[in-house]
Length: 176
Length: 305
Image 1: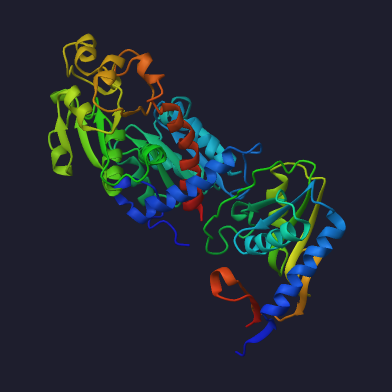
Image 2: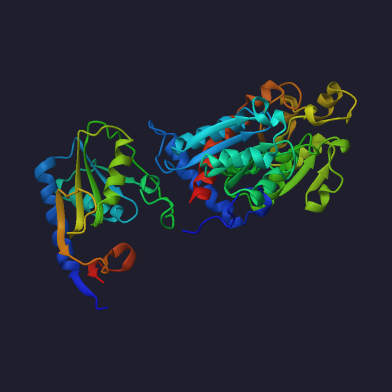
């Protein structure tokens, strides 16, 4: 099947920066906010956004965490199990405004699991959702993102692949 | 991600190195979970586990129960003393009756070696061996190795001495298999009467002198004298055993290096190990108990997949 480029590295960078400014609109200086990336791929988005936010705002203390949702999945025993990753959240989520971050929003099931996993760590004041790519019209659950990098219309047989400079050599998003 | 190579956990002997590594990496994740404020994950909420204990146990039973609850499984507990086993029901019948109530997994401790293997061949459920006679106690060996690894890193080349009643110990046999698979050297030490005749054929060193064993090892795993399994006397008196094999602070302090002291419990304080040693900073006995829950969560989680 033909690959289609959704975001090249220039647009990728613009999109990430735009998401940063949208976040700043709602979170000011992030004093009571936290970014939490969902393992494994959401962590890349969260780290990149954290990096840009830190330099835009010139603050080094924005909270960043990684959340693993393996044990919260609803498809346990229905598909091959996924290796659990690390949950690393070295701050209290209690009463914070938490932005959950993932790379691609598809069925919404991962986000559901992420919310359950997050709420087991405490009671945030507010939870928002940021996804780099939103695959519209494919939701299994009533979940919608608060911040979206790019909305795409896809069919089930297609795949969205997000590539990162750190691991794949360049920043890009492909529809495969 | 790969699964365990075996559908049941009968013994360490059947596990591969990759299985052990997978259990350890999964247990690390669960250890993080059980140190949270909410120590529970919903992974196994559609699974029912039967804990069948045909022999007394405190630590292992509680540890399994807690591990199952932390994974959100439903559990039923059964102990032989209060059951129809005393009315003459066979093991297979007992288990099949419990399985007819739709249970998916059986955790079993039994006084006879081979009971878990036997069960795995005759009933349709995942079996976890929680100790069968003097044969194996796989989860104990896994948590022991996991605890050592946490303290000293990679086990390859490390020297572990298992000291005490080797003859009646399932912990000893499982530990030997597990440690060897991880590349550690193993020595068994105890009175000659309590060392099985052919144990050297497993590739372990045999020593009857406690001091020599302690000088050799990095880790000493002290075992209890299992008086309940000893139908004849294997040594003249407990007092004499203490003189020869009791681990005291004086002996530990006189060694050329600081070794780690372990004990699978229950401890007979003042017999194989003095209170001073058991409560010292060299002892990792309570870490073993904590890791036990994480290891059992990992085993049950991986088998249920």
